[in-house]
Image (cartoon, rainbow, N blue to C red):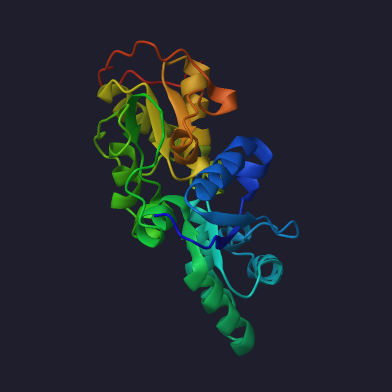
Length: 273
């Protein structure tokens, strides 16, 4: 899609990307501009409030959500490299403000304008060729909120399959939770780690050199295990693949020149438990 007029887009960069992998934000801006977006970054934006919301702290979540709503313009698209945060705004905010009619109206309007990156590229801009020179064998993890919360399944796969240098391979149980789950991983670390181990087993079984997703939280969890154990796979955000970056998340780079499929039951965190 080559629009004559730039499409105004506000970037919601998310806490995790801002704190742990700002390159994801840069890549998101780059790919949006490639397809005709005029990207602005509201500097007053803050956390969407999801951690507080999921912990039952509705008062704090409501305060952050209110600040979020005031940080973005009244019109134009809002795009984020996170299905989880987009789902919070779209589905969580109407719950938070159901007793505040005026704020509820604004929350619903913002919810209609917010999109996860791959969803926006495919469903709004109609991108069929990402124009990426990325090369490698890639598998994809469906984050819970992106797939179940937003119903986004085909968009990221369409983009990956359209990149000439990408050999795309599906993993088994691609839609099973990676174990991160935001505060879930803090409250139930043993269960979380077991879930991550199972996910990494499925990734290794594909023989892929890269695992990608539309949510950084998942990639931090998966990449953390990969990095600690030393498996030759790189966790990389979809936005970075779309701009041709091959290094993976900066904290989890590993040699991905040769990957052998691993049998089930062989993945463990260093030191065991």
